[in-house]
Length: 167
Image (cartoon, rainbow, N blue to C red):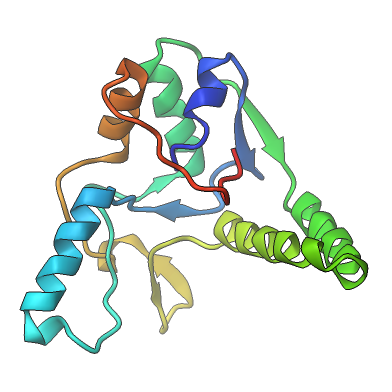
């Protein structure tokens, strides 16, 4: 979720899918997640279960992430809307190319994963209503995404992303 910090620093717009309200999540920091996983090793009640987890605070949309990032930089928000159909087209093209050039198949899979995260909230799904439920998604940890954004902007933290990063 921090991949666009450098984009915005370079005065580029924050990319959102649709209107930026399609999905929401409760981001959790690496250290808060590590603490939680350590607790799972020590607490037998947490073993061999599917456990929902979210970071501290309320669920936030992609638009809210962008708005706050711009606010932290003291700039008015600028967004570029990316249609989900663009991801669908990229998946189709990469899928076909992957049949001819096997090295392209992993890129098609990465695009499918990206589409999933662009269209599905990372919150507990209420099976009764079929809707994502931010109140049923536990809040864990202490570091918020916006505190991390501020730390990146100040240069106090590094944005350690892997080869699979999109931004």
